[in-house]
Amino acid sequence: METAAAAAAAAAGLRNRYWVLRHGKSIPNERGLIVSSLENGTLPEYALASDGVDQARMAGELFLQALKENDIPLENVRICYSPFARTSHTARVVASVLNIPFEGPQCKAIVDLRERYFGPSFELKSHDKYTEIWALDEKDPFQKPEGGECVDDVASRLAKAMVDIETDFQGCAVLIVSHGDPLQILQTIVSAAKIGNSNINEFSSSIQATRTFAVLSQHRKFALLTGELRALA
Image: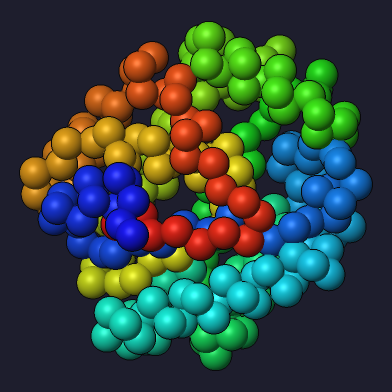
């Protein structure tokens, strides 16, 4: 079934088609840790757990099936991923399933797709503390956790990432491999966007216009499980 976000962007006249994939179950997931800083997140010891590799492989198979159903050739695939260990590992597994080179022009790390930084008060702490952050988000998506990013901060850089991808690629099937909060927020702003055509400036303006309290405070409605693939546009 087509999601609200997919329906909103499918009629938008975008230059590419989009899918999102949350990374597979990671070692931090297994250990119940919040690993959100770029410094920690890129460490190899925070890559995928064995179950996460299986999830990534399954997601790759589902994505391959979607490509076949939509008659999209593999040469038109682009994988854009967060540079964190768990997301780059996921992207590498998917590329292997698709039989496309990970070290090549079809796969690109984009820093703006990184995990939301929750701040030093939460970094390397129990993932049970996510509930505190999400309660704050619902109350005020413009309020930052101490030293961290608020929902609007993440929406701003994701909007930029989308504009950059739309500028760089045309006629591609783009798989965005990222994290729970960023992908929730991305789906939220794409779902709310009113995009009339493929003009990059209008696309950018429409995405930026979604950065309101009413929209951003509801990002948890678009939650993804680890390893979950979903059509975006």
